Length: 269
Image (cartoon, rainbow, N blue to C red; front, side):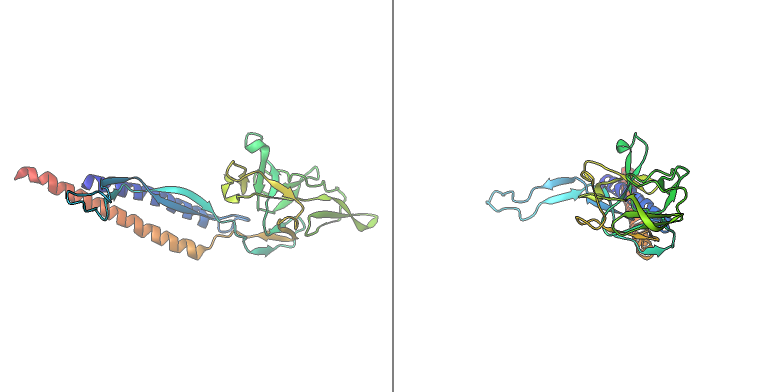
């Protein structure tokens, strides 16, 4: 009946509205360092089975196909695209890009996943205590990173994460520590909490930290940042498709409403 069509179209409007929200967030973060775009995956809902396939009639003939009416659509998940963004050369010594697989581990609030977050944003600063911190609004410290001496005249970070500093009176750079990267068996299972940070979940699997360039981990590139991997052209195309699908579902509601009006007007005859 038309009532079913009303509810079915309503599920389409709700799901497509969420898709538009996700696309809007992707476009809004087109210039966010290390941002990973997301897409919405849909799945159909339950079916109202009016006739089962394979049922035999009085002559022993089997029905070749059944009669099923779908009850709409719902969102299965949002799927993050962790493909690498384009490198942006900055020349800043504490701008670090991961070429390949992996995340930087940062120290976040204890009430979020044991206080450890993960990010692809390599925009780092040195705070007043010499600690390397992430350049977002909270400034969490880079876990395991060495302290940079206050009198350091230069900082060099090798592709394998070795941190070298030059100090007055010592022309040869000296190693002060190591920067590791962390990988997950299912990075799409990470949960975003904002500020360019993700946290571990049961779906992502446990973190596996190691030296950059080893065991499938990416290497580090000093003086570069990873751009957002949002493709504005693709996002705009998806936005147009979502808008048109939204309009079609709206028209379905109008058609169902007109059918119900016809049924209601039958009482007058």
